[in-house]
Picture 1 (cartoon, rainbow, N blue to C red):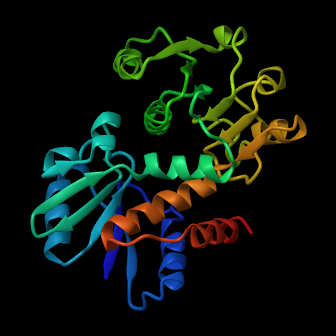
Picture 2 (cartoon, rainbow, N blue to C red; picture 1 turned 135 degrees about the vertical axis):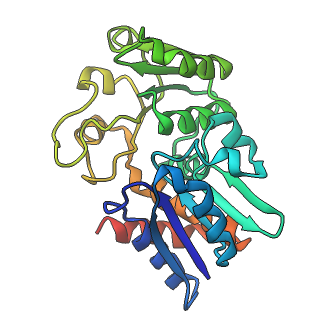
Length: 273
């Protein structure tokens, strides 16, 4: 069985290692997960050729999560709402798109014991990952949603703001965040990612106003934001569980089977060892 990852530059990806661990756990001998670097003008033909070659499906990463949509026969509700596809399943009926970042984030929240229902949630950042996070929080019954941007008044934020308002959310600046508090804080920015460690998008005076903090960064294992959360007694979680969970969710779509939570959790722990 063949699966893979489509993107433009993929040398940094740890997805093959995660999927290989899934194959081992499920005793899927002979299965492969390949990095499929693709130029923009070759995207459509590449998808067609992969389907013809018998691939079960592919994951999709930057910069193609939106670009693949016109080639698909159907798109899941979550992917359509988010406006991005990161998983494609091939079958005799065509190509079908999904967003497993949505599912992966939900599983990661559950793993750290944070339930968004009825909770005030704040999301740092306005990129593609933030859209998946916001959609999941809205669908899960968050009582309020704030997204924080360093460029709140930039015209490029108009589409994001429309998406956010459609989920009953509000866009604020980091200065305005100083007057807010909540329950769950999620970092969807790259601030604090290796090699620029020891930094955080917000200070400790903000962090201690929450009861749980999740950082989508997984390298380092504990970012400065998570360190501040830990020392202040918050529930914390990093991005590796989400990354592993979204990979497992893609496998579930391709294989039409459920991957046990204990397998997912074990792989996430192994990836961070």
